[in-house]
Amino acid sequence: MSTANPAADPPSCCDDADYDVRQWDVREGCEVRQILDRIADKWSLLVISLLERRKLRFTELKTSIDGVSQRMLTTTLRQLERDGIVKRTVYPVVPPRVEYELTDLGCSLHKTIRALVVWTEKNQAAIAAARRRYDALEGTPD
Amino acid sequence: MSTANPAADPPSCCDDADYDVRQWDVREGCEVRQILDRIADKWSLLVISLLERRKLRFTELKTSIDGVSQRMLTTTLRQLERDGIVKRTVYPVVPPRVEYELTDLGCSLHKTIRALVVWTEKNQAAIAAARRRYDALEGTPD
DNA sequence: CGGTATCCACTGGGATACTG
DNA sequence: CAGTATCCCAGTGGATACCG
Image 1 (tube, chains in turn brown, purple, cyan, blue):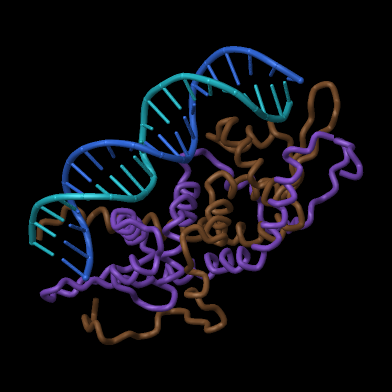
Image 2 (image 1 turned 45 degrees about the vertical axis):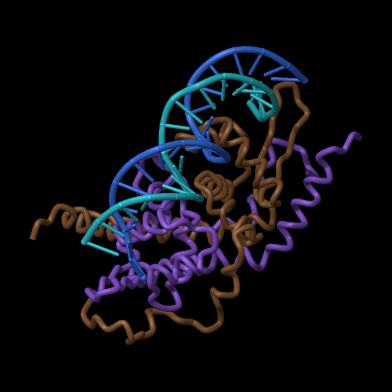
C-alpha cells in the first residue's frame, strides 16, 4: 500500500494481450463455467492426475485417493466419462473388472492439471508462510 | 476397447517421467490437497482470472462475477489474501475504497489458471459433443 | 468387484439486515 | 462502499445396505 492513490493503475505483473478474460466472464450458467467447475473439482483433479500414469481399476482409484467415498468416486468417474475425459471399459468376467483411462481429451487436459499441482507443490511453503503472517496479524491490537 | 485384455498395460498418452503423481497423492489433510481445493475453487478461479488484468475494487469484482454473493466474494477474497495470492489495500477515504490485486505469488499462479480456462474454451465443443453422445446412449435398449 | 439406492448430517452459500 | 452478522434452506457428500 505504498502509493495509496486510486487513480494510479500500474499494470499488474503479467498482462499478455493475447487473452481477454472479459471474453469468458459470461453468464453463470455458461458452459465454460460449468466445465471449469467440473474439472477443477476436488476429486476430478485427483482422478485425472492418477490416470495420467496408467489405466486403473475402480478399487485402485479408491485406494489411491485417500478420503474419497465410493459414491463420490463413482459420481466423479461418471461425470468425467460423460465429458469425454475418461474412458470406462468393462470386462465381462465373473468378478467384474472395470478399468478407467484418460481419453485423448483427458490427456490434453492433464497437462494443465499437472501444472496446477506442480505449482501448488512448489509454492506450498510460500503459502504456509503467508498464512502464518496473516494469522499473526489477526489479533494485533496495535 | 479394442483389446479387452486386462493384463496388457500400454502406456497412456503422456508419461513424462519428470513427475510422479504418487509423490503427492498423500493423506487427506495434506497441505497440497488443501491448497488445491482452495485455488481450484469456483470463485477463486474467477477472481484470480479477473485480477490478472488489473486491480479491481470490491464492487467491480462483484459486478464482473455473475452469480457471486457478497458473502462468498468476501470469503473468497479473504482466503486468497490469507494465502498470499491477492493483496488487499484499503484507502482511508470517506466512502471506503478497497482494491484487490494479485501478489507476485498470485501472478505466478494465474498463468496456470489461465491455461485451464483456455483449455476449457478450446475443448468446450468437444465436451459438449461427448455429453451428447453419452446422453444419447443413456436410454439405448439394445 | 464394482457398483446402485437410501438415508441423513453437515455445511456451503443465498437472502437479508445492520455497521463503520 | 465495503463489509459483518444472522438466519436458514438445498445440495454435497458420508455411511450403510443391498445387487449383478
